[in-house]
Length: 225
Image (cartoon, rainbow, N blue to C red; front, side):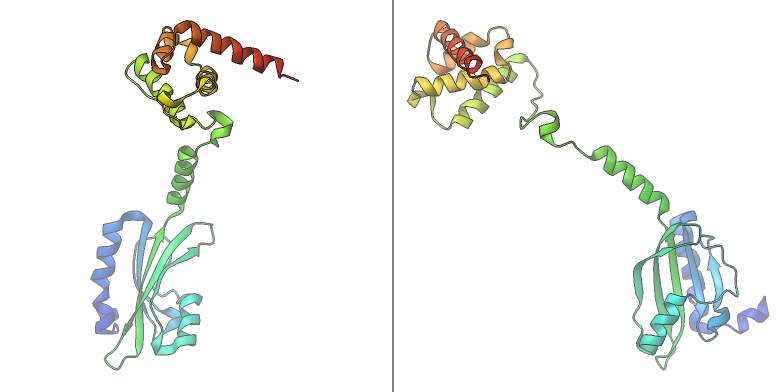
Protein backbone atom coordinates (compact mmCIF):
# COMPACT_ATOMS: atom_id res chain seq x y z
CA UNK A 1 0.00 0.00 0.00
CA UNK A 2 2.87 2.30 0.89
CA UNK A 3 4.42 1.70 -2.51
CA UNK A 4 1.18 2.73 -4.22
CA UNK A 5 1.14 6.02 -2.36
CA UNK A 6 4.62 6.95 -3.56
CA UNK A 7 3.36 6.81 -7.16
CA UNK A 8 0.52 9.26 -6.55
CA UNK A 9 1.18 12.86 -7.47
CA UNK A 10 0.86 15.14 -4.40
CA UNK A 11 -1.89 17.16 -6.08
CA UNK A 12 -3.91 13.98 -6.55
CA UNK A 13 -3.10 12.69 -3.08
CA UNK A 14 -4.69 15.87 -1.69
CA UNK A 15 -7.92 15.02 -3.46
CA UNK A 16 -8.39 11.69 -1.66
CA UNK A 17 -9.67 13.05 1.68
CA UNK A 18 -11.89 15.48 -0.25
CA UNK A 19 -13.35 12.58 -2.23
CA UNK A 20 -13.93 10.62 0.98
CA UNK A 21 -15.61 13.57 2.65
CA UNK A 22 -17.97 14.24 -0.26
CA UNK A 23 -18.97 10.57 -0.54
CA UNK A 24 -19.62 10.24 3.19
CA UNK A 25 -21.57 13.49 3.27
CA UNK A 26 -23.98 12.48 0.51
CA UNK A 27 -24.29 8.80 1.37
CA UNK A 28 -24.72 5.54 -0.49
CA UNK A 29 -26.02 7.10 -3.71
CA UNK A 30 -22.84 9.11 -4.15
CA UNK A 31 -19.53 7.94 -5.54
CA UNK A 32 -16.38 10.04 -5.83
CA UNK A 33 -13.36 8.94 -7.83
CA UNK A 34 -9.85 10.32 -8.22
CA UNK A 35 -8.14 9.66 -11.56
CA UNK A 36 -4.50 10.00 -12.58
CA UNK A 37 -4.81 11.10 -16.20
CA UNK A 38 -1.14 10.54 -16.87
CA UNK A 39 -2.10 6.87 -17.36
CA UNK A 40 -5.66 6.95 -18.76
CA UNK A 41 -5.75 3.19 -19.40
CA UNK A 42 -5.70 2.54 -15.63
CA UNK A 43 -6.39 6.01 -14.24
CA UNK A 44 -8.58 5.21 -11.22
CA UNK A 45 -6.37 5.52 -8.16
CA UNK A 46 -9.04 6.02 -5.51
CA UNK A 47 -12.79 5.56 -5.25
CA UNK A 48 -15.25 6.17 -2.42
CA UNK A 49 -18.66 4.64 -2.97
CA UNK A 50 -19.97 1.86 -5.20
CA UNK A 51 -22.36 3.56 -7.65
CA UNK A 52 -20.49 2.43 -10.79
CA UNK A 53 -19.03 -0.71 -9.16
CA UNK A 54 -15.53 0.10 -10.43
CA UNK A 55 -12.27 -0.86 -8.79
CA UNK A 56 -8.89 0.83 -8.63
CA UNK A 57 -7.07 0.45 -11.90
CA UNK A 58 -10.18 1.03 -14.03
CA UNK A 59 -9.70 3.28 -17.08
CA UNK A 60 -10.89 6.84 -17.51
CA UNK A 61 -14.26 7.33 -19.21
CA UNK A 62 -14.79 8.17 -22.85
CA UNK A 63 -16.38 11.53 -21.94
CA UNK A 64 -13.21 12.69 -20.21
CA UNK A 65 -11.01 11.38 -23.02
CA UNK A 66 -13.09 13.13 -25.65
CA UNK A 67 -13.02 16.48 -23.84
CA UNK A 68 -9.30 16.27 -23.13
CA UNK A 69 -8.63 15.49 -26.79
CA UNK A 70 -10.73 18.45 -27.83
CA UNK A 71 -9.51 21.04 -25.31
CA UNK A 72 -6.22 19.53 -24.11
CA UNK A 73 -4.91 21.39 -21.05
CA UNK A 74 -7.58 24.07 -21.43
CA UNK A 75 -10.31 21.52 -20.83
CA UNK A 76 -13.10 23.08 -18.72
CA UNK A 77 -14.61 21.28 -15.77
CA UNK A 78 -17.64 19.19 -16.70
CA UNK A 79 -20.38 19.99 -14.23
CA UNK A 80 -23.76 18.33 -13.72
CA UNK A 81 -23.98 16.22 -16.86
CA UNK A 82 -26.18 13.16 -17.28
CA UNK A 83 -24.85 9.63 -17.31
CA UNK A 84 -26.68 6.31 -17.63
CA UNK A 85 -25.11 3.08 -16.35
CA UNK A 86 -25.30 -0.26 -18.15
CA UNK A 87 -28.11 -1.36 -15.85
CA UNK A 88 -30.13 1.78 -16.59
CA UNK A 89 -29.46 3.88 -13.50
CA UNK A 90 -29.34 7.63 -14.11
CA UNK A 91 -26.39 9.56 -12.70
CA UNK A 92 -25.72 13.24 -12.28
CA UNK A 93 -22.01 13.60 -12.77
CA UNK A 94 -19.29 16.22 -12.48
CA UNK A 95 -15.63 16.06 -13.42
CA UNK A 96 -13.21 18.63 -11.99
CA UNK A 97 -9.70 18.68 -13.45
CA UNK A 98 -6.48 19.08 -11.49
CA UNK A 99 -3.36 20.63 -12.96
CA UNK A 100 0.27 20.70 -11.96
CA UNK A 101 2.27 23.88 -11.47
CA UNK A 102 2.84 24.15 -15.21
CA UNK A 103 -0.90 24.12 -15.91
CA UNK A 104 -0.86 20.62 -17.37
CA UNK A 105 -3.87 18.43 -16.54
CA UNK A 106 -2.70 15.50 -14.44
CA UNK A 107 -5.92 14.18 -12.96
CA UNK A 108 -9.50 14.76 -12.01
CA UNK A 109 -12.04 14.39 -9.26
CA UNK A 110 -15.25 12.76 -10.50
CA UNK A 111 -18.56 12.83 -8.65
CA UNK A 112 -21.33 10.44 -9.65
CA UNK A 113 -24.66 10.75 -7.87
CA UNK A 114 -27.35 8.14 -8.55
CA UNK A 115 -30.62 10.07 -9.01
CA UNK A 116 -32.67 7.11 -10.28
CA UNK A 117 -34.83 6.92 -7.15
CA UNK A 118 -35.20 10.69 -7.09
CA UNK A 119 -36.57 10.60 -10.63
CA UNK A 120 -39.12 7.98 -9.56
CA UNK A 121 -40.10 10.10 -6.54
CA UNK A 122 -40.27 13.18 -8.77
CA UNK A 123 -42.65 11.42 -11.15
CA UNK A 124 -44.80 10.26 -8.25
CA UNK A 125 -44.90 13.78 -6.81
CA UNK A 126 -45.77 15.35 -10.15
CA UNK A 127 -48.61 12.86 -10.57
CA UNK A 128 -49.82 13.49 -7.02
CA UNK A 129 -49.60 17.27 -7.38
CA UNK A 130 -51.17 17.50 -10.84
CA UNK A 131 -54.68 18.85 -11.31
CA UNK A 132 -57.33 18.04 -13.82
CA UNK A 133 -58.41 20.82 -16.11
CA UNK A 134 -61.05 22.75 -14.23
CA UNK A 135 -63.59 22.24 -17.02
CA UNK A 136 -63.38 18.51 -16.32
CA UNK A 137 -64.17 18.83 -12.65
CA UNK A 138 -65.39 22.09 -11.14
CA UNK A 139 -65.80 24.43 -14.10
CA UNK A 140 -64.31 27.86 -13.52
CA UNK A 141 -65.54 28.20 -9.93
CA UNK A 142 -63.12 28.61 -7.06
CA UNK A 143 -64.04 26.36 -4.16
CA UNK A 144 -64.94 28.20 -0.95
CA UNK A 145 -63.94 26.81 2.42
CA UNK A 146 -66.00 28.62 5.04
CA UNK A 147 -66.85 28.31 8.72
CA UNK A 148 -70.63 28.43 8.16
CA UNK A 149 -73.16 28.43 5.34
CA UNK A 150 -73.88 32.14 5.69
CA UNK A 151 -70.28 32.90 4.77
CA UNK A 152 -70.56 30.66 1.70
CA UNK A 153 -73.82 32.31 0.67
CA UNK A 154 -72.45 35.83 1.03
CA UNK A 155 -69.28 34.96 -0.87
CA UNK A 156 -71.22 33.51 -3.82
CA UNK A 157 -73.54 36.54 -3.97
CA UNK A 158 -70.54 38.89 -3.91
CA UNK A 159 -68.84 36.90 -6.71
CA UNK A 160 -71.91 37.03 -8.94
CA UNK A 161 -72.59 40.75 -8.39
CA UNK A 162 -68.92 41.51 -9.07
CA UNK A 163 -69.04 39.47 -12.29
CA UNK A 164 -72.05 41.48 -13.50
CA UNK A 165 -69.95 44.61 -13.14
CA UNK A 166 -72.76 46.97 -12.13
CA UNK A 167 -73.39 48.23 -8.58
CA UNK A 168 -76.67 46.98 -7.15
CA UNK A 169 -77.90 50.58 -6.77
CA UNK A 170 -77.64 51.06 -10.55
CA UNK A 171 -79.07 47.71 -11.60
CA UNK A 172 -82.15 47.50 -13.76
CA UNK A 173 -84.55 44.57 -13.66
CA UNK A 174 -82.68 42.61 -16.34
CA UNK A 175 -79.46 42.93 -14.33
CA UNK A 176 -81.16 41.61 -11.21
CA UNK A 177 -82.72 38.75 -13.15
CA UNK A 178 -79.22 37.94 -14.39
CA UNK A 179 -77.94 37.92 -10.81
CA UNK A 180 -80.73 35.57 -9.75
CA UNK A 181 -80.03 33.34 -12.77
CA UNK A 182 -76.34 33.04 -11.94
CA UNK A 183 -77.08 32.36 -8.30
CA UNK A 184 -79.59 29.70 -9.29
CA UNK A 185 -77.04 28.01 -11.55
CA UNK A 186 -74.56 28.00 -8.67
CA UNK A 187 -77.07 26.21 -6.45
CA UNK A 188 -77.59 29.11 -4.04
CA UNK A 189 -81.32 28.55 -3.76
CA UNK A 190 -80.73 25.08 -2.40
CA UNK A 191 -79.68 26.84 0.80
CA UNK A 192 -82.40 27.58 3.33
CA UNK A 193 -82.98 31.33 3.70
CA UNK A 194 -81.13 32.16 0.47
CA UNK A 195 -84.16 33.87 -1.13
CA UNK A 196 -84.48 36.32 1.76
CA UNK A 197 -80.73 37.03 1.68
CA UNK A 198 -80.70 37.67 -2.06
CA UNK A 199 -83.81 39.83 -1.82
CA UNK A 200 -82.16 41.99 0.85
CA UNK A 201 -78.98 42.40 -1.21
CA UNK A 202 -80.88 43.32 -4.38
CA UNK A 203 -83.30 45.61 -2.57
CA UNK A 204 -86.42 43.73 -3.69
CA UNK A 205 -89.02 41.60 -1.95
CA UNK A 206 -88.66 37.83 -1.58
CA UNK A 207 -91.69 37.46 -3.85
CA UNK A 208 -89.87 39.44 -6.54
CA UNK A 209 -86.93 37.04 -6.29
CA UNK A 210 -89.37 34.11 -6.67
CA UNK A 211 -90.83 35.84 -9.74
CA UNK A 212 -87.37 36.37 -11.21
CA UNK A 213 -86.58 32.71 -10.61
CA UNK A 214 -89.81 31.50 -12.18
CA UNK A 215 -89.37 33.81 -15.15
CA UNK A 216 -85.80 32.80 -15.80
CA UNK A 217 -86.33 29.07 -15.31
CA UNK A 218 -89.31 29.24 -17.66
CA UNK A 219 -87.25 31.00 -20.31
CA UNK A 220 -84.44 28.46 -20.02
CA UNK A 221 -86.87 25.56 -20.27
CA UNK A 222 -88.64 26.97 -23.29
CA UNK A 223 -85.32 27.55 -25.05
CA UNK A 224 -84.29 23.90 -24.80
CA UNK A 225 -84.09 22.35 -28.28
